[in-house]
Length: 267
View 1 (tube, one colour):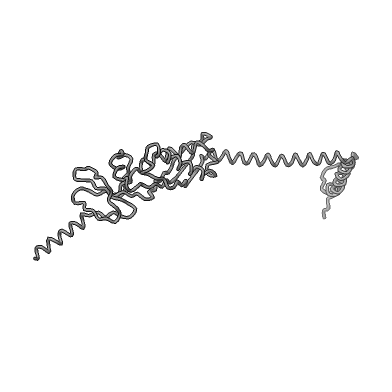
View 2 (cartoon, rainbow, N blue to C red; view 1 turned 60 degrees about the horizontal axis):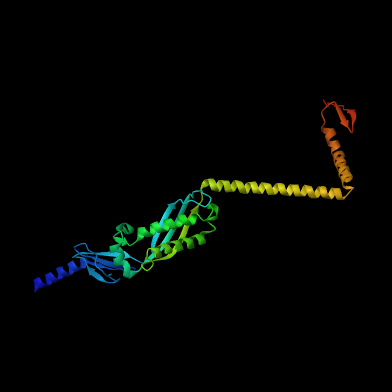
């Protein structure tokens, strides 16, 4: 009896350590001892023995494909300094086994014991769509066109999936552009252009003001004599101060040479 109990405990321990549980958001696929992928998927919540053969797990829900440090070329032929995006895709649970067994293994990615079906395939399609979208916009216009670019990129990936007859197996739920940075030279040129435009507007205002003043003077015959009289009055008001500060020998006032006398008050 004791021997039977011991064997039961050992059997339970072996089963516990030799089982794989399929978690929510993923499915499993059994690979036999002959390395052949068996048809059909192992559903979430199930326990599956892995003593004989192997059980692979595949995340299928909201898989994030992160694309960073891209440098696409804009419509103005400038190369972007940085472009980062995220593409979220989902795998049809009933297609995992077929995709894994029939598609090139380079299309999939391994990470921390999980296999991400078609991850690398989505990476390549997303990059192509992003570089194609960038060509539609000037470098400085991309930030404002972020939403339109996201829509275009998603539609482009979906179109490619349909052409490859993968639209029933893979769905694209979201495309997010996280960062758009034009080249430094483009930003510097834009700043110089803004500065030049502001200076031009300032000069336009000065010219327009002078033109209006000239038109006003021409419309009023008394304007020029009045301006001349105003200038002479200003000069006369400034005369006492000018005489007091003069340090020469003679002073010319209205064409008349006037000698000046300097005194030194010394004790």
